[in-house]
Length: 490
Ligand SMILES: [Mn+2]
Image (cartoon, rainbow, N blue to C red):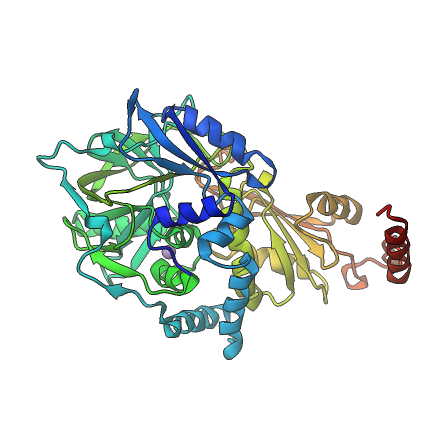
């Protein structure tokens, strides 16, 4: 199911009891994020918030602000129009089952064909609601200052657009990418563009730099939440986010051309910020209270020059906030892992389940359970994950047996501590590190550690006979449950 506007999604959240409306004026400077942080720290992710009168330097904005709209399992399911996240995982598995692939590469190929066949292919249209109001920056009074962009934390370097879908193209083959890179507002018509060295946007930028041509960029805000989900999903390089969004929402995406460059964007988004990045131009960006829970330092990043802003008449400005976990991004990441698990299993048939606990802020900690068959299989899985896309950043990987629930951190710690001999069951490797990780001595590179918390086999030199977990038998459990129910003391 799809939403024809971001407002329609918010209405749905309201009907489902997932929205709090705040009619009083609230400052876009720190106050909105403080209220949102309290919701996000509530068990289960709290509620989505709609600020109907956000203020910018004391004056009420024309546009309301929505935040925490995908910060719970239920809201992500509502965003994607599915009963639960597992539904989408099953659909992906069904595509892959139609003709079982022999490799991950082939799997993604089949997946792409599969979703193409499901009429997910985008359509070109000549206009749409995102063009209801058109401001060309040259000669217009309207500017970035009119958007209710949040200042999130006290030591932030400024206001940041936190939920942008950034559209770029590879100049060589026209391949589209949609990514999410935070954008610091520098002035009325320029922002930072925080694509880190490992991101596709940065790679596209490098190609424009080599050709010495300005790089067209379009930034979309709002519209069907499936777009935003797709922009954050761990799709392999080259798999079009718009194709994936069409598949997830079961409706082709209508794409309309920008006013001041040739990029195409979904016609139903709330805002389109059009412009370009001049190759080689860098400007200091930050600090920013980041998803690591720490401020990231000031660093030079590309500059985005805005040439036009178009929007719906009734546009709603979408935002999120990152910081000490758990935050909204945890729920997005967790849903992604569950949806893409069938694809991971293509290359690693032994993988049973995987979790990125909130405390690990995505890249710091991975729990993975496997059906272990042979010696050192845990190491094979770690090294495989360290070689896959953004999983390369995983600082600590803990491999567990299939009987451990990786979504229960307490259970994982029990198995980790009980099943390991620290020297024997750990390994250190060198790999790229997340640019945002402040711990490594040098940026972007560092050591990574794996823990083999699986039961040890004779083939691994362990001959003492692995003991059995103390667990009650099923028959007794059933019988006692029945009795407690009868006595009314469950
Ligand atoms: Mn991509």
